[in-house]
Image (tube, rainbow, N blue to C red; front, side, top):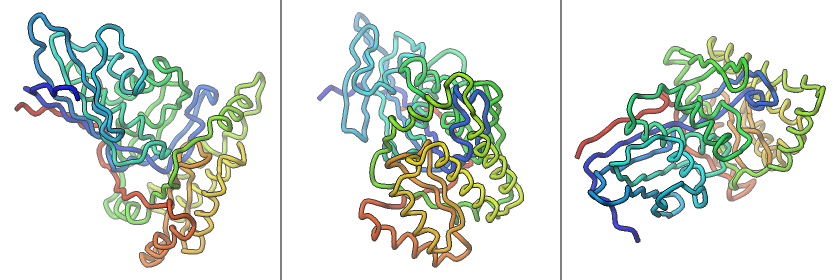
Length: 351
């Protein structure tokens, strides 16, 4: 067990995850341009940094405590290796941090890893937002989102759209227009409290009990869409679902929002049948039986992960749906959420 550094400053940051990402797949390099509607929700990704002066004649010490995984370790001096938790290590590496400061970084999220709700993006946005408090100048939320995207694409060489980082940085209900990958504008959808509360009441996040995993299927879809002279018309229904979701939200038309969610899920399935798994189909069928009016397989789709379910007017039917979930699979469960009016928050507490 490494010795904990005596803190003199404490920096906190939080960033929401996202659900109901209509238009996902169009925020990618192979789509070239896209439109996404998504919703930032709690539970947050949380970061806390304990900062102290590096003792004279000593090397700076950086400790990472990935609380969800029970890992606490010291980064080796010199060039940072991306070996234990690459996302966290690359996020530290991309920031120009003062050499005279040592710190311990604690990270935690209530959202399960691999839940298809942009948890990794929320963690990196929160971590970069916290680290930014230690650097000269300040980055805007949009710049934090861009840097978090660069961590995944440039530092780690991963396939990555832009919507997760932007929703985490901005929060609320987002309408993202990507005019030229990876450049995009973000509009936050402002609605009366009555619509906000009703959306919060009706939306349910269902976790399918296992980490999202479909890299082979995703690879097949990307290969087809990135081929020379590829027909990318299958992406247009996804863009239209995002536009429809935005319009429905402004008018408070939940039936229209439900139709947009269904439209998006059907368009995902048209990209590749395996993007809507048998487990997801079982949850959708159960949702229909209990009066739900919308369903969206979160993220890119595939095995595991989660769904956003839009319930109908009756609270009793929502409760009966939730109660019936374990009958499909004991590992299926609802993750408690509520809408996040804010995105990234970072602040300093002096001890």
